[in-house]
Amino acid sequence: MSDLFAPHEPEQMAGKRPLADRLRPKTLAEVSGQPHLTGEDGVLSRMIAAGSLGSMIFWGPPGTGKTTVARLLSGEAGLAFEQISAIFSGVADLKKVFDAARQRRMAGRQTLLFVDEIHRFNRAQQDSFLPVMEDGTIILVGATTENPSFELNAALLSRARVLTFRPHDEESLGELLKRAEEAEQKPLPLDGEARASLLRMADGDGRAVLTLAEEVWRAARPDETFGQEDLFRIVQRRAPVYDKAQDGHYNLISALHKSVRGSDPDAALYYLCRMFDAGEDPLFLGRRLVRMAVEDIGLADPQALVICNAAKDAYDFLGSPEGELALAEACVYLATAPKSNAVYTAFKQATRAAKENGSLLPPKHILNAPTKLMKGEGYGSGYRYDHDEPDAFSGQDYFPEKMGRQTFYDPPERGFEREIRKRLDWWAKLRRERG
Image (tube, rainbow, N blue to C red; front, side, top):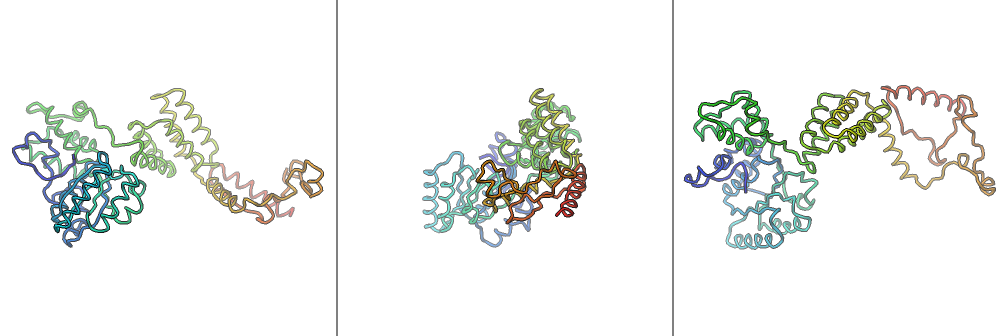
């Protein structure tokens, strides 16, 4: 199983193994990039010192050391280590692992079971871990790149502690490159700008930065040093870590939405372009921009929705890449528009009121009376036609009598809604005067 860190193999094999494999640490203290877990005061270091390990879920992106940390934990705690992958394992495989763990337990040794991609197991398979976790047959360490809150059963999560593995920052990636240079006994043939670009290309993945370094060493001739453009040509630029169906997708769309809401057009454009670059469906982005227009701008600028719909249609007409500029224009328009969630809030409040008072009839004076019987019951009686009233406003009450008047929409003093506020205040004044 590939991972950034794992125990060393015999030195005679070193020349045939990838650099990332050769540089895997031998102890928790040697693990880089996760000081909150493996540092002197890290969570896992404290567990080992206390001699007490519980079941855990390791949550984090690829190349952050989840597999290796699990191996090192088993070694430092004196536990038997078993590893399976949820992608390749089924119920029969789990039964064999559990039976073997029971045999070890009877012999006085506990098993640490590492399950890679644990979120791939279905609900029934996840439930099968519960009995062997509860009776101490195994200590479960599951690894996932997806949010455990969404992907794992509540029963499993209640019995395991979730520990977050962070992407490597540039400092820890730089430390890995220094280790690589020591192991290779030669400097990486990159100038300063190219070296910084290589760290950014790794996107927080320790294994990736070492793989990229290997590609550079393979391509370099003696005494050759590469600049940034040379680096891009050699490694063909590593694709962004982004899965359109998983966390990367939701993280970036969330960042885009919040940048628009926060009136930061530069940040909004940055996240929009990252999603374009990662291969996101532009029409999905067009739909999200339409949603932002109605949720965060609303009637503060009624043109926002018009422009976003026009941008979506323009992309549909022009295609990629020409149509992407229309979506970028809409994105900047939204970010620079006055903000209001007054309609959004009013809609939620009115929906709640509708559910709570869904059986109440409207007042009879605003109901039509197409039959004599209904006229006799008072339907339509007393209704005043607003267009015949002064200022085209009658001031009648339209809510069910048992509810009384309600206020859901409260426009702020921003953008076009400042004008709407003036109208509402004027109508409220007339309503009070006319009873």
